[in-house]
Image: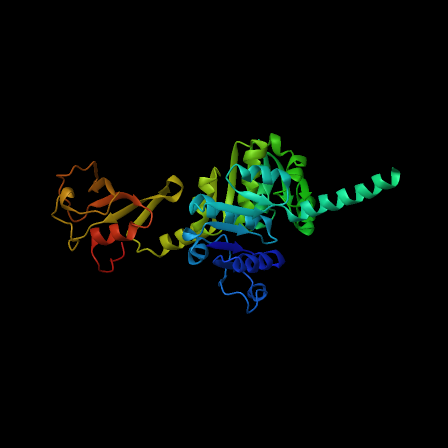
Length: 138
Length: 225
């Protein structure tokens, strides 16, 4: 079982994909409209609430889940709910969307794995542009 | 001392004023540019506009040489990250955070935040103490609010009058510290017999004070002192 916090574009995409692969997925978001992004196709549980709230996480059966993934746009909320999942509920795998490389380093210490979509995308674009420039100069 | 305050709302504003009047060096980081301007106009402090969890901004504000970082922004998650970054990336020795939801206390402590200011708990404790019948006086709250001292005056109808202290089944982690009998203060033993008119001072865990009170003075509404 997998719990996802944040039902924006990334959360929605991830939830649908993981479910198609046969996982049981629960999605949490404070905004009902965001949860509606998932549409009829999604069969998992939807929970409206804040991910930093222990009671909301309990309702999402966090203690039974193998992974918790925090991918909202609110980085500090991602960090705090990941800490709650890891430190208080001992979820085996916790993955958070954190952009700042120093924060990525810092929270690795607490066994929180990270993804940095904006930073990674920016880096990739930079690489692509540099390739073009290098190619031109060559 | 050099104190870095993150969050310039009502609490931050008054904190800055108090700290400056005590002669401390203070810097403020605040998200809202208008709030920054107000603080900069009013006080002679360095004000940085931006996100207080951003390591680069904290570095610029001199976080490395800060003796204390106080996180008093409105959201608990922001205050937690500020303290964590200050502690782990800048080796700040003392971090203090405001928390709004008392349920978050456990995580903040686990993550090593040195002191917590729980606005919600403080206000509700104050109200609780105000509405408690007058002849039960909460002396003081100890150890960051975990223990409470409760004073109760026994009258003739008290269920414990005539009993020894050993016979009174107090809730766990409760101790009768002293008895004031007439003009004498007694350090009680298990064999001390409780009498009407005794002023009993007990220490108990926060949250058990009403149970202790009920046990000592009975169910009825106490008469005013």
